[in-house]
Image (tube, rainbow, N blue to C red):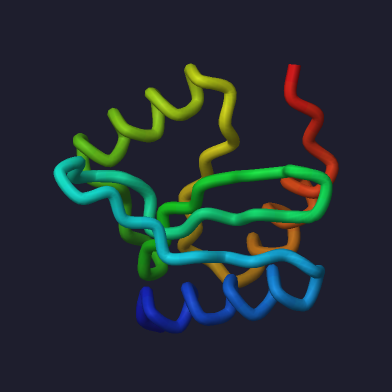
Length: 96
């Protein structure tokens, strides 16, 4: 399965739950996650999408750490079976 296929399934699943899953780019800042999930109630998360078995590069891991330190949810998605779990966690997340 290709990364693009995993990404398409994520976008469709988020939309089916009433949210949006936009492509996330940050000109001038390499290594940011591929997608940003925006769910009703102001819930937000970032998702790095990978083909099955692939791992994030060191710069990507550094960006994930920065986002987590700021209090955001960040996921690495490389398996279709993880999509529903991610959406559920985002929908139920209460920021502190």
